[in-house]
Image (cartoon, rainbow, N blue to C red; front, side):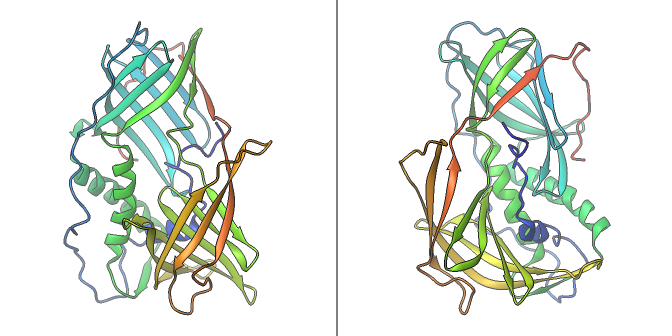
Length: 335
């Protein structure tokens, strides 16, 4: 697997990174400081059932990890059912998060598959299983980083800055908490070879001959980059499935070079559909088509425009080893 396996997390989606930057800052708007929890933010219920273990389980009391410059991942198999999972990654390419999860797992030795379900987040010695509370903790953690980096942000349009960030975090937490993730693993010597393709998203970059720029999708985020009259423009938003299409409210991000002040301007709503092809190329890719269904009035892209991207099908492999030292012991904090 390449170094971008964690979206969780590297967005080169800089505009949406910027959206996150504005969450609890001192703003130049007169909007209320506290937003009510919207209906779309609901507590996630643990309804997923792990498959039964099949065959011999040789994982208890074993610890496997991998560490690179941009991410790290470790599995500490406590017993036949319980696992401590730790991960460090760049959230949206900017905010480094160090997370520790209590999880349950099962294995199928015949299929060489490992099934993991995150049950709760550990923040120091505190265990948090409420999805909304986890979202609040992550939002607060990112807020602390933001306050160091920025002085002020002006929001032009409807909505609240806090809601924009909470939307982003909510989408992430909803995609990992109580979800069963499948890893294909092969144990060899003091390590395991893991195919984690199904668990870590990759960025798709769409282009069109009728548009001077690109549209990137990653981790439920859309990012539009274009250049007009020599000036670069950046738009971003958090995608939601509205039952028919993928939709997002777009915001344009503007920040003068070297300045600690920025502005975020609501542009309008964009809706798209995405269709993945079935023909596999010699380079193990398939073509994906994205059609713009709806776009803001007088926007740079008109409805009906079709974009294309190549999706890589090759598996991403991780070699996770057992360190010679004893299992690490740490009180995990969000940073």
